[in-house]
Amino acid sequence: GGEEGIACDHRSLEGYLFAGPEHDRSYIEQELDAARRAGFKGAELLDSIPGAPFDSGACIRFPQQGRFHPLKYLRGLAAAIHRRGGHIFTGSHVAKVDGGDKTVVRTDDGREVSCDSIVVATNSPINDRFVIHTKQAPYITYAIAARIEGPIPDVLMWDTGDPYYYIRQQEVSKDGENYRVNWNLPGYTLPTGYYRLFVRNTQPQGTFAYADLAIAPTR
Image (cartoon, rainbow, N blue to C red; front, side):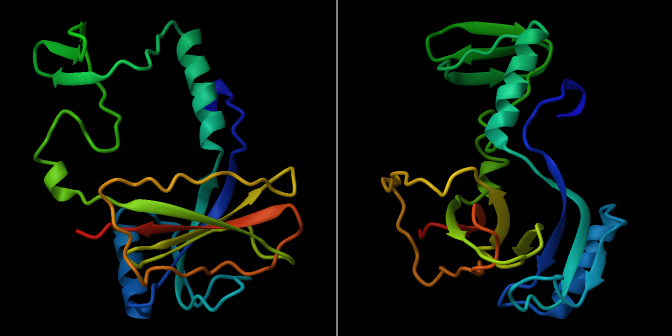
């Protein structure tokens, strides 16, 4: 949680990037060169992910990666903003953002907020409808949870595919709960042939491994 001391279950972990089905060792070596050019001096090439329950092939080890609980972090962040005199307004839809010499945020109900600086933190920007949007593609992420038995390393793993597969472990305090999934996805048709799960049954009871499947909707 940094200087705010936010309790968000943060833990430093190693991360491993391995080749997807369409790539080989030479592609991983190119990724390593790119990572080092970007400043990841601690990145190194390995023949496989140590202790992984599947044959990953060549991979890149990224030290000092991290995992935390996003909702616990956001709760602490909101509390810190209030404590420092800030205000959070939910349900206020921004209709327009004007930068430049006079920075103004306009909401749907006609209200205006003037300020010195505006930070647009909306993943896909709402203040520009062409420069960024024309370079982006919509993706849907699916999370699959599975109970695993036996020891495997508590690390982050993801591959170079498109869609890519991402695996991490998450400790839980109960045996598990069932939640209703909202399948109402207007405007999207799920593609076929994209589903694969690397998780094996290899971790103590009460621990899960997650494989997030980033799947692009068909056009």
